[in-house]
Structure formats: C-alpha cells, structure tokens
Length: 79
Image (cartoon, rainbow, N blue to C red):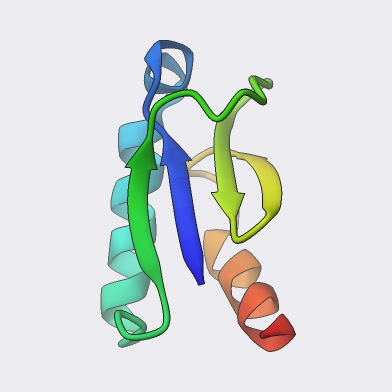
C-alpha cells in the first residue's frame, strides 16, 4: 500500500504534518512498515476541505482527528 499525503501550501495549512505524524505512529505501533509506504507529495490536484491523502488509487480528505487506523485496516483488507 502506498499512502501519499499532500504537503502543498493549502494542505500544509490544513495540518498535513499532523496527518503524516499520525500515519507514522500507526505504522510503527502496528508493525506495518513492510506493508505500507508513506510519502509526501506536492499538490495531488484534489484540493478539498481537509488534507488530501491518496491511498493507492483512492483519494481521501482527512485530518489528524479522523480515524486513520480504520482507513488503513480497510485498505489492507482490500489487498
């Protein structure tokens, strides 16, 4: 699984750093570093109300307050 978090200007202001940190924590705590590649990306072209995150081919608008663990679990089940 590849998780790309937008770190462009708009998403940066919406908290992309906090989203990245939460994903990092989830990946580490659940020993998922072999299953998940986490990276930053400049403008994913889908600006929305929250930070734009692309997981494989699907786009999400997320904040650090969202249940990112559940999203990861659901995507892992699809693979």
